[in-house]
Image 1 (cartoon, rainbow over the protein chains, first blue to last red):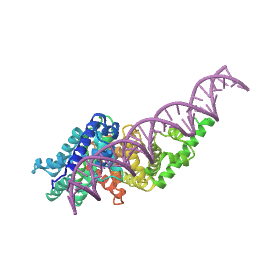
Image 2 (cartoon, protein in one colour):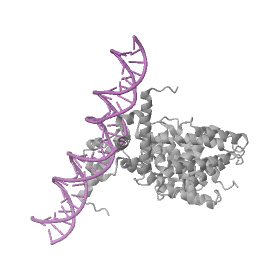
Image 3 (cartoon, protein in one colour):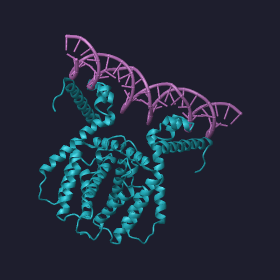
Image 4 (tube, rainbow over the protein chains, first blue to last red):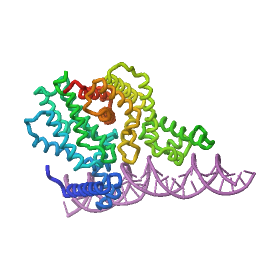
Length: 203
Length: 203
DNA sequence: TTTAGTCACCGACTGTAGTCTTTAATGAAA
DNA sequence: TTTCATTAAAGACTACAGTCGGTGACTAAA
């Protein structure tokens, strides 16, 4: 499986060089202020090389965004098992939002959320095989089993609603230019309210 | 106030011609498949004229979107006063979503929601002076006065959360290419759950 | 080792949104 | 009525994402 020809190894190196240079430049100047020509020039490659390895300028950033799925897997390993499902979802939300805010950053999220609307691109955000969905789904199932959540709504549906609320919070974050919007607090508030509506104790 | 010179009248006519042609072409071919050159050619005007009247291609579509605020005002005139605040919000949501789905259409909403993320453009979606905010705000206030909603959360905040949920539903609608996503049903479900969490009867 | 084919890469080219300089028609002031 | 300033409109031009035909180094089969 790891039998790469000389050629393929070199290609991989080129791809990595483009990726590194892109991310470096995006970080310095912002996605919109970096041109593909510049990336290509700084990385010492070419337009042709860029587009053999990436479908678009957006896609380079998407590659970085995908790291978040590893973050989720990591998170679950450390998640204490004994706490409530609600608590688990809140903890997940908090950690996730801090990660997005401090590590990936608003510029990246903006790029992802803009690009996701384009019908021609991959439906990454709503791809149900993402670790994120599985994690939330598992927590929700447990929450229903132990009578914490209503079971009049399917776990699939609840998962759906939770992740949609998170997307909503992130989208709104993107809308604000200044720092008036506290992503972590806003997301937690929204999720808390949603969980309130999901509690089994309400009618 | 209505003293327009010959020149201004002609200018207004040009603007209208560009607007009509644009909307016609967007409707026929989709926003992304219409070029500014085409609009200009079909409307018998010029690039220069186009950009004196509109800041961007997106902004033409935004003009259409703004009609929705008249829709809200209209809606309120017909809203029965005697029903619950929750019921009013649900009714508003349903009517609004049908209007967006059937009259404005997904292509327009996609355009608005893509454009809104761009920090350089007007923050129309989160502009709190929009009729939409005022309407929701009024309903919420009444709901708190008559003890229907918790009053541990400020009406501003609740309004905020409601409108955010709506944006979330609309954003998700944009993500789906096929017709698997029923905008009206999904929005109502989300809002119902949110209202559940806002009820005064829960702790 | 030769040879035929592949594919990573190159960079000139295309399409399109948006800008900039110029022009002429209008309107205000004398 | 003449003059001067204003501004809507025109269209050539720029910037930039993405495409496409060509090229040569590498691979694999003989």
